[in-house]
Image (cartoon, rainbow, N blue to C red; front, side, top):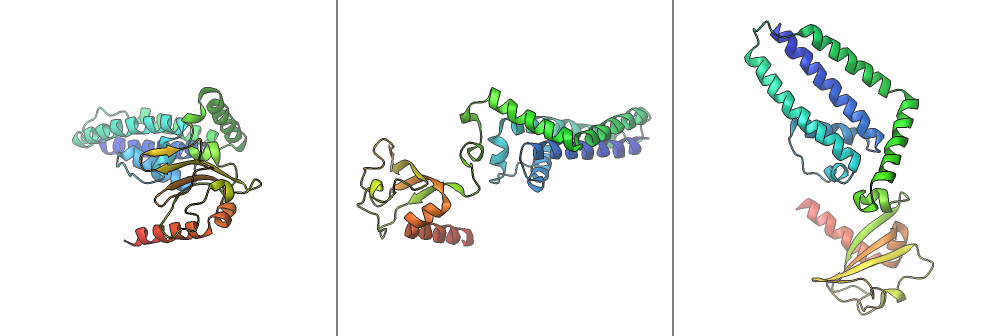
Length: 233
């Protein structure tokens, strides 16, 4: 009976994981990313990948992840206890079977297309009403189109824009905004368009990727080369 209990509880774990994967996808996360992060949180393995920021920066996903972490800790204790008492007759397999049926029913209900759309709209409405822009991920706030990007562009010694002002480089019709210039410990925001660019400056720009490539072609090429070198180190 204890062995049956353990198998049934593993079935509960599997269903709970799939339900949470579904809920994460309803918040806009890709299914493969959602499954990896759900398992990571449930097992408390703590993968510190860039994808984990998609969870931490999203208010709804943070609440779901809190449940997963707590449920994972509880499940570990249950599994250890069940294994240590594998021959006990006190386990209630019938009740567990009922729980499994309830969870399967919940998963089937959540998979209904109309309900999925309703819940997706509810999540979005919940975020709009209860959270400030500062609480939302950068992607949700600023990435209105697929090719919108925020770039930290370092100015190297051979840059052709050194000594120039950004107002002379970025044209009025360009889909490009200067957020600020980082110069050591100083942040230039108010006069970012009229400040002469120096070696070592970090330009923080927001706009369309094609526009960035056009106005800062050499700098973007240098940045891409630097990133590729760091990857292969």
